[in-house]
Image (cartoon, rainbow, N blue to C red; front, top):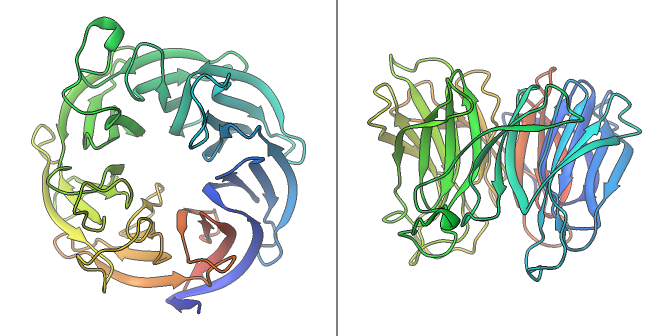
Length: 368
């Protein structure tokens, strides 16, 4: 049964499962988990009655589960769908669309590579995780979209060992160390690097990102680093990085994923000093997609909405960074007879929250 504490349901949009939702104005953009569903565009002017405006479809071998929108430009990822046979002729990369008419999205360019996973977009630059020829695993890429019809790569960075074509040799197995997605604050990129932890990059010169520091804790901890989110204001005089591990691909025996708070006041020595876990989750065996996944990347205060897979939406207050605490929660009814799998959450300008389920449905809720 659905459960809400400190959160009020406002609306619901029935749709296939999604990997990400973002809102621009009164329009929501949902990137889906499985073909043929690519991206659905939804009118949310009346959040109690969301209405589909348009949908992009994709071929069966394509995964297009991420989307960003700024200044009427929509970016969507294209990568190989899970279990796709290598060499299938996939057109991987970044799709670039004009959505000045949200009901009529129009592709204006395509930046091609082997594939792109997650990314961020500030209206001028896209900070992404391209999979490029000659490298093992996704690296950090920066695209200039001042002219969206003609995207230009301006910078890249990779973890030493990834550039196979350049003679580098990884010290890890397979693609364990790879860029998940970069987040910019000022002249820094905070980059989650999967089982390679996270890195902080100086991008004062966008063309030459420079390594500042990094920290990798898997192992001994079991789950990969999904998001490194800088808090844009000090907490108790400290600069803090909120780091979410994702509850997948555990290193055995595999404890559930959780949130970390990391002191980056002295950024060359990032220091974890606190963590948060949902009450009731312990070290007992659980299936994947049970624990932590993704915080809302727009930080509006000390209350951080987090999509927590089988535990729905959790609002975590970090006002006292030494003791983060849950202050509200919303667990929707499971869709399609399965279990809840909350995958992503975002705000709109009205303060409403949009929670997309990995399997089915978009919930629109309000903090009370």
